[in-house]
Length: 169
Image 1 (cartoon, rainbow, N blue to C red):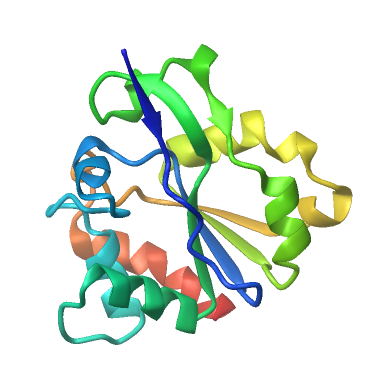
Image 2 (image 1 turned 90 degrees about the horizontal axis):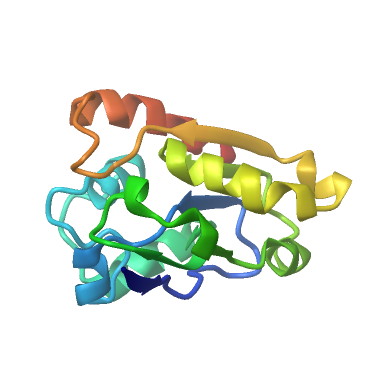
């Protein structure tokens, strides 16, 4: 198995929402970019939600999120797995990110959005119990995964569910 290490947090202290994936896939790790796989629908969904018509560089994409008070991170800091699938994560090797520190700095976050069921499951199992009661009163939403491996829904169906984010912006 190969050790996968997540990316740094993308956030400013005034973030209102936090979008959490599980762990970057191999293409993202190779490119050193969140959601770098060309068939991942994360960035196209963000462009639609934030009314951006054209492609942006990766740095401009991160700036777009920051300007809209969106923080982006993964539940896991590191883990061992083969390939990119969440189902291949070795549960005994999971190291979660530090959400106690995150929420102590990002006090304006009111909504946490999970990019897929695995991100939600990993957060609830490894991080939720460590949060203070006030932080546990956040609104949590599981959204359909934007991964190309999650092909049960069309882009339009995923976008429709992701629109809940707009209520928090």
